[in-house]
Image 1 (cartoon, each protein chain N blue to C red):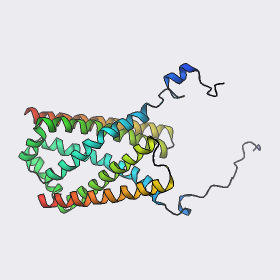
Image 2 (image 1 turned 30 degrees about the horizontal axis):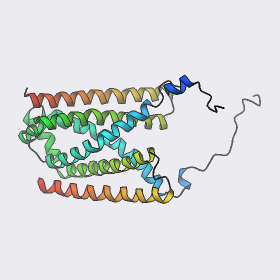
Image 3 (image 1 turned 45 degrees about the horizontal axis):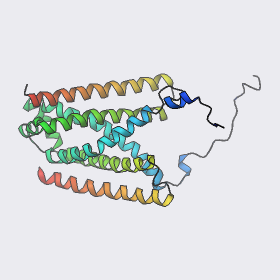
Image 4 (image 1 turned 135 degrees about the vertical axis):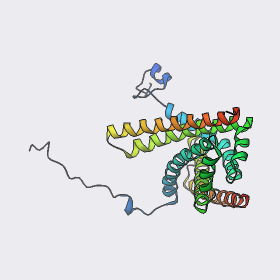
Length: 132
Length: 128
C-alpha cells in the first residue's frame, strides 16, 4: 500500500455527547423534531378531511379515536409542536431579517418561545377537552 | 476594484453553482410567513372541531371561507413541510441514491395527500 492510499487516523473532534446542552442548541434541534412531527401530523389531518368526505360510518370510526384519551394526547402533542414551531419559526424570521443575534437576545427570545408555546398548548388543549 | 469573482450578469441572476440559487430558501420563508395566520386559524378551528360529528364537520368544511382557507393551509403547509424535510434529509442522509429516493418519496407523498385532501374539501363543499 502506498503512502497516499494508507488510511489516516486523524483525531476526531469531540462529539455531541461531551457538550453540555444549552437552551439555544436544544431549541434548534426541537425546531427540526417538531417540524418532522408536524409533517406526519399533516398526513393524519389530510386523512381526517378525506374521511369527512367519505361515509358517516368511516368518519365515526376515525373520530372515535380522535375523541379517545389517546386521541386527546395526540392532539395535545400536535398543539405543542404547532405552537412551538410557529413561535420559533417567527424567531427564525427575525434572525433572517438580521435581528436578535446578541447572545442575551437569543436566550431571551428562546425563553419567550418556550413560555408562549407551553401556555398556548395548555389553554387550547383544556378548551378542547371542555368542548367534547 | 471589485472583490466579487462573479461576473455582473451572474450576480444579477443570483444563481449559485447548482443553478437554483436562493429559490429553496426564499420559498421556505414565503410559505412560513403565509402559514403564520393560517396555522393560528387552523389550530383554533381544529380544537373547536376536534369533537365534532359527521354533519357538523362537513358543514364547517363546506362553508366558502373555510374551504378557501383550508385549501390554502393544506397546499402551503404540505409545501413548507416538504421543503423542510428535504433540508433534514440533505443534512443527515449521506448516500446519494438513498438521499435522492427519500426526497422524491417525500415530494410524491406530499402531492398525493395534498391533492386527495383538496379533492375531499371540494367534494364536501360542492356536495357530491
